[in-house]
Image 1 (cartoon, helix red, strand yellow):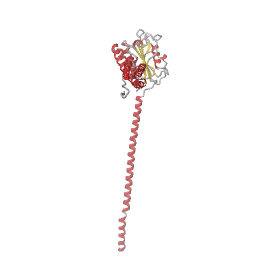
Image 2 (image 1 turned 60 degrees about the vertical axis):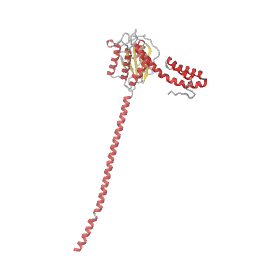
Image 3 (image 1 turned 180 degrees about the vertical axis):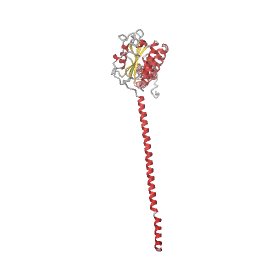
Length: 352
């Protein structure tokens, strides 16, 4: 009996010694698998968070771009077109495009009434969705002629016509204010003060800035204004004559080589003066530059190795101030009507 127990004990001992090995291995494998799965889940969570953040950033960028486009794109009018002979002059600002808020319209009317109350001019603003294919100048001058802004004896009427969906505007002036508001000055006002705001859809801001500049000129001393305009015109001409001079310089060099210096210089200078004046350069400026060009060509400065490198529209037509409608009006008694002023087609226009 003791032998059996002696033999059995070692057998039991051997079993207990070798059994834990497989269990430990399985546990290690299970632990490794669990860690691997946990790492995979963690990686998946991180990846999802990264994708979520990326999508949010892209959405914010898209929204910012959409907001930027909405802010910068000029607004359009959904109102129907209105014929020029259907417009009724009952306020300084006639907004048939329904593009202005009540406060914006009130502010513009205050500016216009101040000009009238101070005896400077009678100015109105008409805003329409479109001229329906009619030239903006023709539309504006027809409205101005029909409304007869200004007084019959002074002709100090001014009309600003804006076609929102056409992106065009025109300012027409009566005979009495053409001197203080020449076409060139109105072109600058449109280019520098009005259309920059129109391009971003800030129509009230652009119109207000234009009225303010016109108001300044109406109040300025005529002699001081004339000198300032002359200086501005001179500066514009100095800039505009440069491309003609450069072209004539090279053309004259070639022509002088073919015809001789005297004949080539003379022909080139004559052509330069003619073209420059045709394209709006002042005659005195063109002649002065032409003389300089002729001398340089005669001296051969630009040939034989001695070459040196140089590195809006206005109103036309005419309409008289006679005709029926809106006589003796003005700003009094809450109304607004023309007093018989005449328009001769002066003014300027632009687009945005």
